[in-house]
Length: 505
Image 1 (cartoon, rainbow, N blue to C red):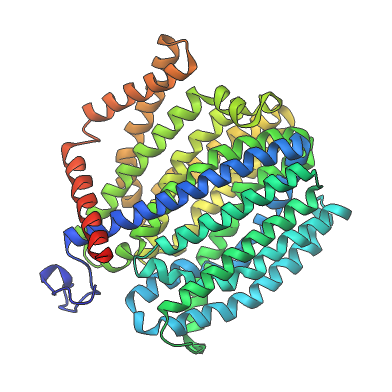
Image 2: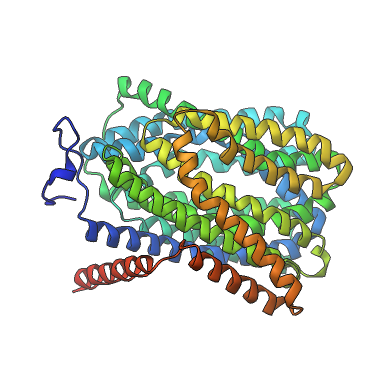
């Protein structure tokens, strides 16, 4: 931050001054403030998104929801082309060269324009061969228009760099609110799927326009296209883009394969379970969104960097395990409340899928660590292995076990990709060991807590609270949660409230 005095921790071994890092107290407050803003904003967005998902399921039914999921799962396989991994590279580079922000953003936006158009063209051309002919192909084209908006979204990285992420969080709430209203109106009117897709494109257009308008306030000039830097940016982003492609394969290929190999009705049950399990992925995204710039500028100080990443791993693994407990023990009542009895078959699928979130939370930290250390090229390996394992297991298990086979394929492939594969390389092995120190005991205690609660308690609601209680006792006994964490949270909250009060007065 401007005005922060340079101390010995702000210099690397060569004596070169590192980028500005706030003092420990200010940094803790800023991270908490931004994480709280992100979680608060994403919490509201999550409420709207959950409401939209519930209404959408009741509006479209199992088969209609299956078609809807199949369309967006297919398009997700091409999403990497439009974004091309520019955002994390921009965050890293702008965090280090804020005076060059406008030009860096213009460079990325120009490249993204060409890539976004190519994304839609390729997706539409391939659609008939992937099982999306006729009317489904038209829906793919309509839904794909959302990717044209990608360049308008890129300048929003300036919110992240300036540690003012509440702008993005608020705008996301607006989008989800508009989407929820659209879905409710369409439910009452009883319109077909094409209007649902058009409504989603409209809500994305509003969000993109707001992101563009507000991000411009933080940019002093329009900037220029940097020809030489564009080549470097493209080469740095390519591993992330390719990793995103592979990630989308093992994130969404199961739904595309279920669309081809079983019925859209069974796919609809699977989509409902996926929607619930993925609702909470905004939590690690909110935290990592806040700390990514901190990682970028502290990567040259190993001791400080290790301290930040250690705490992030520990908190996210505990949070992921707690979510697994709630969704596993309470799967049936949760699905029944959200979607009704017609989606009862989604409950056992949810109880399996939710455990893949441990690997998802784990990977959120790993990706940001590797990008901060300029080692994003290693992201390709776990995503490649994950994609191969996922496709192989889906081919073996979907025909035999249907949606249940797809759920277990997801769990296995995620875990292999983001936990096991990292041990194969000397450069990523320390990160894997660092995270696994927390992931293994936390996951084991979560499983044990679920088993104990099922054996002891009959009522499903009481069973959830009993399992969480057992888990809390275990984490405290294993010193995974300590008194210092409570002090850290208290001081962070105090600093954040103090800064907010100062800003108001």
